[in-house]
Image (tube, one colour):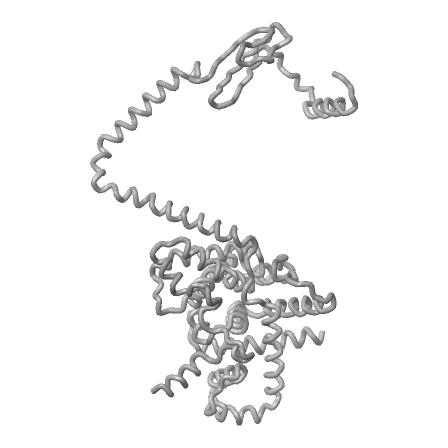
Length: 226
Length: 195
């Protein structure tokens, strides 16, 4: 029975991306030895403790903001949408069940907020989604674009070029493919968790990953050649 | 091999997540497509690049303000939710509606009449009127050099404000360009001219 569970779990979840590097990215991200767990913070929040919610926000705002920024490519919008995410998290917390993993649940809310925003934006500017939303020129100067430490100028330039090439390629694939890649490769989510976040089947996740990777590789290879 | 199954197995293979049975299942396909091995290696490199340029964690700009703004929004939302809730509570107070409406109307009428009565002489304000010369103790330094002009000041110490009304001034001709006049006055000040 246990053996079956292990096999089933491996197929359903897939390896955690960090494991490939010997890292490991599972569990509640960011739980340090002195940091209270998400579960404990959530319980305190459910009792109406605002201070606990403040801690929860501090702990997760970086992940939510990074994920949104990777999707919308605009600092100001990412900031506002991150606020919306946590407002929704606060409102939905009383209904959150401790059995679920908080970070997956939070990513799901983030996914919904971003897609609602994209839909509204698409309605407002019909046909401009690709030009406006996915225009590399609109990338706002944000923390990610700014080197966090002094690097050798040639190395910094190489990194900047690489970042631009990757972001350009990511902008050319569909939002679903981009999100799947980001959740898997950047956030380190398992197939099952991605399926929960994106409200689709594990098969769909694997298929999206398959095609997204192929497209990304093709775009980057073509870009390098040209 | 069915297309969906192939995608699943190749995805797992890319992620180094195949079981030995699955590896066996995929082996013939990989043997037919040797180029896939190079693609896989290329993707592993791409994955590292992705992780290096797209961080998992980026602090939003002004992180402290981020939390404060959020908490304020939450308080505001909760306050807005309480307002209809208060209206709902009316149950035991609903009978009050019947006498509160005429009482509120009467209060408005009384307030209007009182305001009208006090309008000419605002409470707390001291009015002083004069022709040429000082206007009085409460507004020293306000005077008119033209005898036909009356100066009235309204001073409200509680509000810390004073209103000065000059009555009897001639209308400003429409030919006067106020902007130009102001500019030339400022220029004159700069060059030491007197007007």
